[in-house]
Image 1 (cartoon, rainbow, N blue to C red):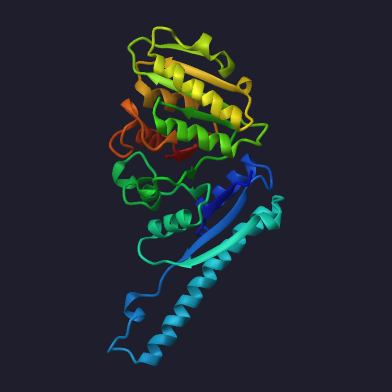
Image 2: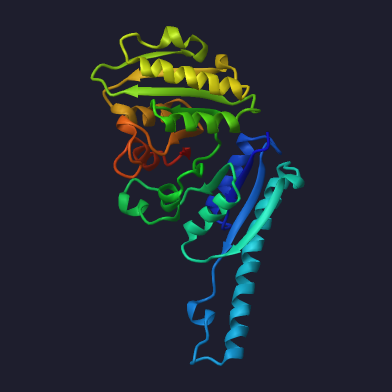
Length: 309
């Protein structure tokens, strides 16, 4: 199955970290990669006729600035491609794309991600902190907020393990998460997948085991919708060639609630990547309104997070 991702770069250390993540998690050629850089537009006073500037001079300055910006963007793209080639990536799996910024930067990136029908958009984490004012307004935040339908990989941390933590509720968005994960990891024999669901109960307990033992693991006292949901999850993963024997299932009741339990598990379980849904039901509603997903994004500064849905 062809898997094609869009990697947005600006040549920064954040963008280089995203390249390192791809090289560490995936074998060369496992993904087709288009590297995108957005060149800044020329100043607005040069983009239309200006009585204060002679027309010929305006056009010459406009062309000069846009050419310089395009050259810088092309250099960023080529640097990223060279890094992937040096790590063993086949050149035929790598593509370059440079665009001039028109309007908001995040919207420009998302427009390309949607028009190109990429399987994921990959960015380095920048400006994502625990303080809401630091987080709001960043390019990453806008990509999360307005990127509905575009799986977004926000890369942070270093020396990532091949362990994937996948918190799930019982919503249709949860199935989208599993579908994306199954597709991307369908030919990844070394990936370790841990599915997790948390009930916010006052008594802490854990039921766990391989997904093949779902009917034994799932507590009979809990709603049957969970058993039906994970039966669908198992079917999706099997269709992508991922054996349920290699997928671990954790069902927790925890006084910390879903967000606290997920963050604790991610930090203590040696995971390199956390895969979450954009929206969900119950404690997983509304990504940017104090939800579980928002709390996970805000607190896991040293883990890569995939946002799906």
